[in-house]
Amino acid sequence: MSLWRFASTGYQVYAFEPNPEIKAGLIKNCQKRPNVHIDGRAVTEISGEERDLYTGAGEGTSTLSPFYDVHTPTDRVRTVTLEDFCNEQSISEIGFLKVDAEGFDLPVLKSLPWDRIEPFAVSAEYQNLVSVRLGYSFDDLCMFMTDRGYQVLVSEWYSFGDEELKVPTWRRFDRYPCQLADKWSWGNIICVREEEEFERLFAAAKMAEKFISGLEDPNLKPFLSEMTLARRAATIQEQVELIGVYMGN
Image 1 (spheres, one colour):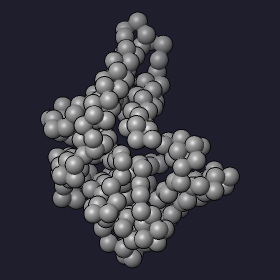
Image 2: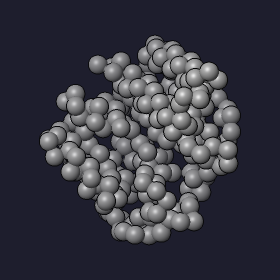
Image 3: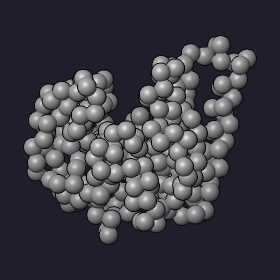
Image 4: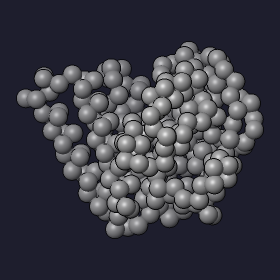
């Protein structure tokens, strides 16, 4: 988790977690990290609303808009925009903005005051299966960032609908504009502003891609479980994200 990496190096970390159980765990684990601030509100485009929080599809899938049959409303949460939160905390600069809002990633990004705060690096999740119900697509998310002067790296994972896959499975890196290998896939976009910085990021991503592909070697794969492969891929993706951030420091 990026939170721990940045917290351990002294960054001021502001995290949002509206799921009460997960929030309680974060607060407990961060007791000795005064530079980590956990907020229980849900980030959307409108502050001050009371919304249903749907859970039940596994840890990390809490959402304001149900997309699995097992999602049920379990709590009421208050909303806040990034603009209002930044005003509350007197935040005028963001080094890394990471968004993983279960379909609400574009609304979260829209809530930032881009006219005065431009993060050095941004990571957000895309998943058309969820976001199209909310009125936007993978391309809409990417173009929102390119319209603000960012270069976009795409990290694509295989669709959850592939019955042969038992665990999340990484697929490839590419630079936007690009076509997804599967429009129902999911993944992340990693965004930086300067062309030179993006080229360095893209080169690092392609090196990581070769390493991940090496894990699929028939001679090696029998010794690695599917879950191990998934975790290795997720760790490498996170490292690529961090390369994008640290280039600016």
